[in-house]
Length: 251
Image (tube, rainbow, N blue to C red; front, top):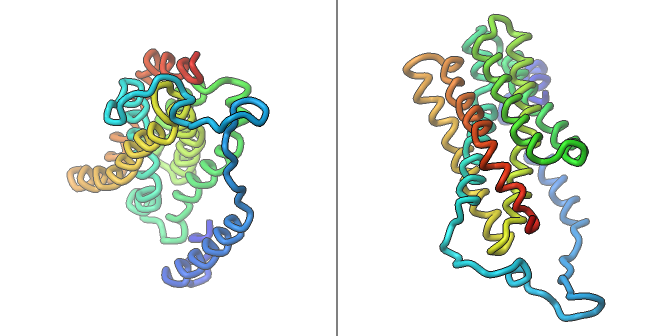
């Protein structure tokens, strides 16, 4: 939305970037001033401090990657690939598909980012009511439907609705993967989460490049079928994902 209004007002990209840097720095400084100091975990009332790695059960080799971590990492790769595509290509897709101005094209990203942000605030309440697995699998389905709308849409309002639907679907997916990774037994939460996160960031960085290559052979809009297929693949992991999520917290 900031991009839309700034372009409407005649701002240059550099002015908008400078404003974003200043605002981001102000928020970061304010957040750092209110950070809580980490408290060591103690065994019982006033007992000995427990080490995180040893308090989670038998310790596995730090080089061994379990099948559950690979599953969660693969899902993170596909989900964050779709997120990276939306971040980098949503505005360009609107511009190339409908010949929209810079200001109107920015609404494509705004539709995705706003629903993603609002969805993240609502995720905890939805998970408490429905559970992690429906949020993860259902969210991937909603995201795939959103991209399908974008690919097939003949009208700008419907395309913006598709991007908004993608943001709604993806909002709660990745947090559930990180929560599940942090609760897997056999190694420390930090090591497991970092592995899953690494898979995800590879997908987020690779997604825009993959779409660029595919768009050269077809169009940006048709290339979006690639991340849509990735989200469908996440839905197909339901049986394995169910077992992985049920092993959280030693269940």
